[in-house]
Image (cartoon, rainbow, N blue to C red; front, top):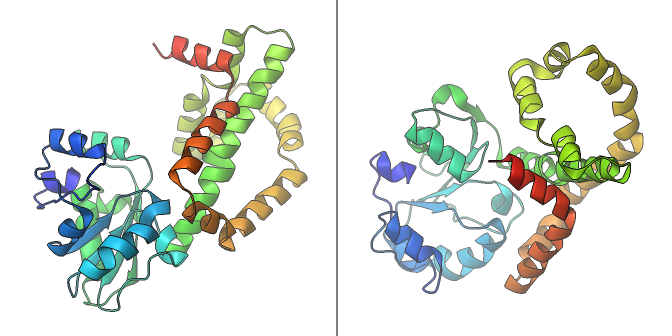
Length: 291
């Protein structure tokens, strides 16, 4: 939507039975075409579909319909770096990877603000790939001073590691463990939620603005002292070894190979299993204090 609102002619390509077609129509993308038809008339093809489907959709509907000298725009370096998409030699291959979800990107665009984003050039067939990447990034709502140049490899490895080990997988496991420990020790669930989760955004905001040292300088002596003597006991050398193993699993391609094989049934089972990574009492408290 940001590209459209910045003056680009955007055609949305979706499978005939996709539930997203109705939403695309509501957002003003008419007509919604098949992926094959959308690619045939496109100068720039944006891979805005789930990463595990890139290779399948590329082979089935995109590769044979690409115009010569086209540009392939990726929002994540995974499928190119790990070889699930092998672009033709005459195509520019570029990356614009926001440091946040699409809804946040859209919200900032509508309020004339900008989050940061990575950009990269994997293949420059026309000699204009970098210029195109910067122009598209700006039209998506990222100011030049907020753009950080990287490579497809570094973005893919860093993003997968960050979300698995820290931002999503690691953080949620730490929160759940802290919550259940406090409840088991006799604290009410609401109290436990407020102590281990509710204040996270405040701490993260301090870290983002002042760094870890600056955050420590702005919290209480008790919090600083407790962090020093207890933090390294929780995240110790054994955890670092597990982090190394997680990175090696990603870099080797084993994780992405498994990801690329996921079926709809697998994803349904995945979503069900994710429910076990939280706690019903935690969810109740989260809903209660989000109001």
